[in-house]
Image (spheres, rainbow, N blue to C red):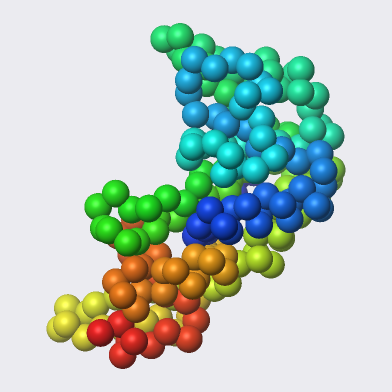
Length: 199
């Protein structure tokens, strides 16, 4: 049976480099495939060891233990001349990068890792579980900051489920200067930040 899951995060470029390096140290067969639709068909120009080397926001985490580079280079569809490389599969997990918010200056929008897997496939589950495990280990919990109808400001006492921030994002987007981590329009702050810090 196939199941799907995802996990959200906040990362700066510094965090991304650290995350890519940690994944590669864990398994040197892990690479990152630029899946942004473009005219580029050469898999060697799309496959990198560090996502910060490319400007794309859309990637797939690829484990070359489960697919050859040659096979991966054939996993696309062409629409209007653009190559749309697949993002999911036994050897792949979707990776969407965090990015500066387009509408609120100084704030960071979330990114996401997502995958689908066969529950009976232990090898597939094992490597994908490890990716989530590394993300959770590197990340820190974040807390929802919100304003009640009467204008009172609150920070949730419980951390947000399935959402973490990596260290550099924690340091640069703590909300104290209006520089929040955003999940769409919802604002989040790291542990230790109080409402009085957000004046």
